[in-house]
Image (cartoon, rainbow, N blue to C red; front, side):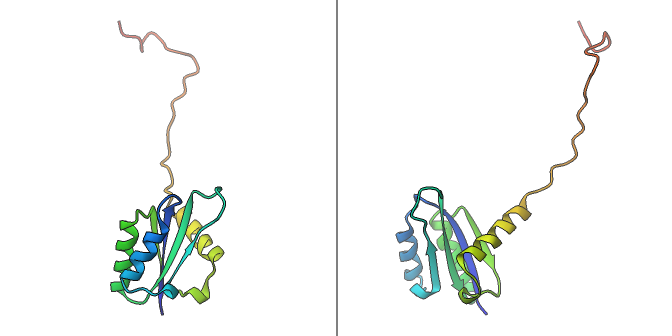
Length: 122
């Protein structure tokens, strides 16, 4: 079973260089998909690569890092046939929300009478 690595990139970064780097590392055009939206509403684009072993996973991570990936996600035991762009995006959204830490309980001292003479130092 293969794994999918998904990388989130700035829209202004060069996706053609990413394609070239992947192909120079031995990946076929059928091993990756780059999702680009033609409108300016999305500041990012997404690339997904199918990797079958740890060596290929490490290679993809290095290529994504060299191409300034904002975030890299690994989906194990998943293939392109099992997912679509929307499903992949939903998985990424769910993982991103899960990474948000709960803030600690804050105790806020509220004074309702102002400063008293014990708090003023001259």
